[in-house]
Length: 311
Ligand SMILES: NC(=O)c1ccc[n+]([C@@H]2O[C@H](COP(=O)([O-])OP(=O)(O)OC[C@H]3O[C@@H](n4cnc5c(N)ncnc54)[C@H](O)[C@@H]3O)[C@@H](O)[C@H]2O)c1
Image 1 (cartoon, helix red, strand yellow):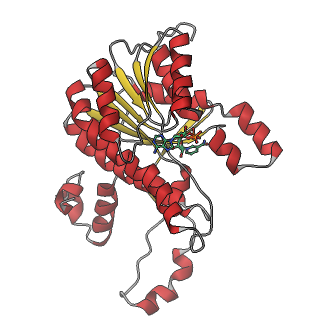
Image 2 (cartoon, rainbow, N blue to C red):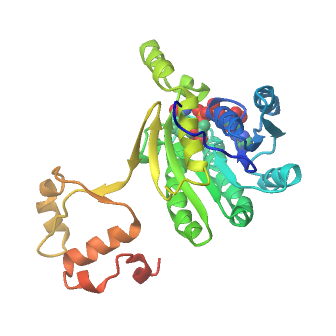
Image 3 (cartoon, helix red, strand yellow):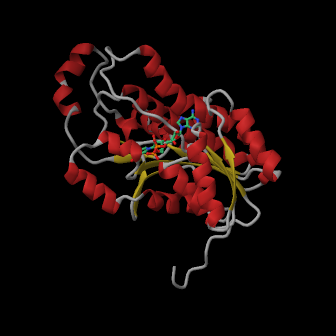
């Protein structure tokens, strides 16, 4: 940190969900090390207490909260208000995973993974939002995953993480109007969750050395800071490297007539690779498609064409 001033969170209050271990613990420790008062939420109370001890042992301030984010998110948010009187930052980090073939997996387990990872996040966000608005510099960082692109044998988790991405990008637009910045991260870090996913010792060693959970915390802490203006974006983050992540399209293919036979005849063209065009928002996708078929709309449509589509 030579020559850099430390990002100061004095006076700020943060909730980190799933902070009893893994990345959540590191997020709580790092935010507290910069002066934030932290609510350490984890359904596993013993582990949440260990995180609080790590924070207070280093001179920081934190309280334990063991509410289930799915069923008791109002109580979780209330913990922050009761303990510290305000709420400025929410790191929606808690999530669970379970593997299995979609059609063989126990339906209750499938929904438990989805609901813990998505419904829990929605509920925490819903109850936190009024306080984040009141903060004036509210920050919400939602933890998705590159699994959102699709991961065989991990359908529930992938679906939940895709839902988080869509929710976050939408909420970011609403948050902009009320001073709340919403960001999404797709992290990679060596945590108990990843230990379950990779049995190969070679991969384990590389992950352990290059992808410490605390590296993701550095990125989260930057996004959470009141002076950070970057928001409404999703980022891959692992170790010391990050990349902004956007939806893109390959060149559009146009058929002479909208018939199934025309598409069958043009399938190989449609499947060709080509130059990628990034589509940072749904409005860009809508606009590009309309202008492609009706070029005269280029001047007519506002840059934010989603307003026209009523979205
Ligand atoms: N580890 C990775 O490389 C990786 C990759 C992509 C995304 N993620 C995501 O990052 C987040 C953190 O991952 P991690 O690897 O540190 O996970 P982890 O399994 O080590 O920790 C998750 C914590 O969440 C807690 N939790 C589970 N259900 C809860 C509930 N209902 N209420 C409150 N707490 C609950 C667990 O007790 C646990 O302590 C998760 O959302 C995960 O999906 C992780």
